Length: 406
Image (cartoon, rainbow, N blue to C red; front, side, top):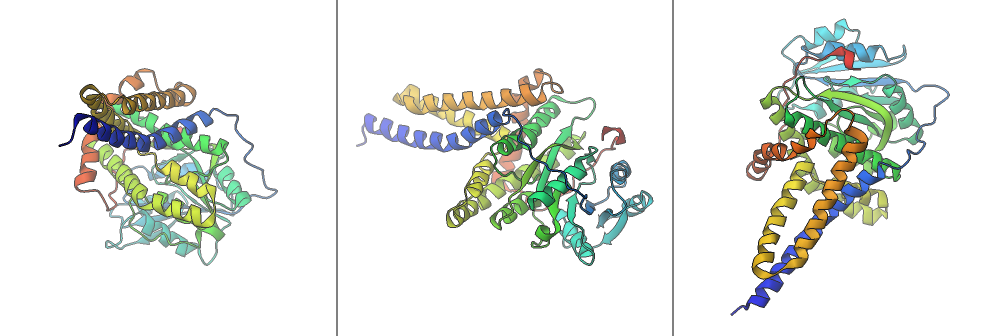
């Protein structure tokens, strides 16, 4: 017969092990957010001559909003640069609108192979006969801040590595509470944490748009896949091959959160299911490669990737803390609860540091109060991942784009 002391001891060991496992991503999150406060390292040496750029823009039925995006890009290009729109399986006037703005348009029809990865691979094949120095990928719903193309292109040449610009989301008007929290989550993931890694001289992860690649690097990989987060997968593949992503401060690419609830759910489902699938498949590969190649940068990428979406991290912490508290009351298992309370304080500190130093000007303090509601909104999304994870690319419905936001 199992005695109560034995049950208490086993319960404490199991809960302590789970708490220690959760401590890893929480600690990494806090370190990255605190490191973002360090003085920014010098990161960009201007070249004597600007590299020749080709901007690739995959577009599927983007006629509604692509014109201001392309006009914004055209104004930043030099005569030797190219802007190529890949009209991918389009059934609207995307190609005609793009041509009218001065972009080169290539059309692709292949309904069996849908998704951004296939479209980008098609664009690279088009460029192969006359390759540029740098390929820049910009999504069809994103406005690029002036100077960003030059900076990420020159950084890519100097470092001979993929480069990621700061990619943020703008709230719709008027914003809902979940929009402000989603904007904050994006800010933490795509600016604060990469800034912290940059300040620690560690690599980052590609985030899907505002990405620059030296031609000599991007031509080595195949992008033709239906991966729903092809940018994250590309980050891992290139990092293991010796080309980890470099973050580029002082840049900005701005997207717009969907105004429609269904579109927002579709977008978040694709991003976060893809993130979780990439965590599951790539962390072991990164750790193995880090050991085999004796490379700390790969281990750092694995640790960064171990941080799940912020709302899921809070949900996991809250759930485990509740179970540990019950065990503490019934079995007097105190140690896991103490560790979990420490972890809760670390999550809170990371969020407050990020908001106070990077988001306070645009996101009011009540944003923080809406976090619990945002987490409740996300519960069905994570439940769906357990039951039937999304594995196929699904386009997010677009809203009209304001060209004045560049």
